[in-house]
Length: 224
Image 1 (cartoon, rainbow, N blue to C red):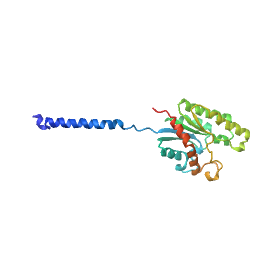
Image 2: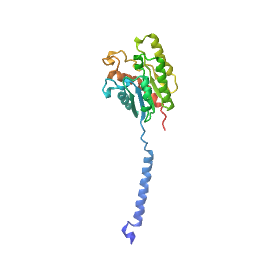
Image 3: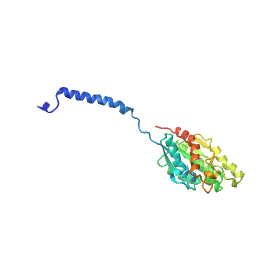
């Protein structure tokens, strides 16, 4: 009597066969679907130059860099570790905090305020070395962006200051850009009224120039 409530045996077998065939057809499609890649977490540890001082959010260095990387097909999450007015000592002091959720790569742009304040280049080097040591210990590749000393500090200070970045540029795992403001500094058309901070076009020029180095940095991120 129970068989009267279901399809005849032949029909049941046909339905079962179709279900098996359907599963076999769908399975390769499921296997072929790629896993969603996690975005690379890129820390920007810097001062007002990377914090976008005086600019609308979308015009700042970080927002323009994120847009340029997205246009290049890169999945990147930028961790904002830039604070206006920061010296290398400030960046060193809060590095552990900004790394709280982890990072896969880092851009370090610090030193301009050290130069403006006439901080001893030995202190500059000690702070930057400590920052790089921390990132190296965590296997985080770095793009170190250099800065030139203000001309009013005199030639001896400038030589000692600039030499710090040159020495650190040779560290393993460090990509180096000698001067973050290259092509933008001292050009009124690319700076705000203070002639120290890039305007939107100045920030765009910096991003365009640094993009190949940033992409090289991201290529060095170990996945898996």
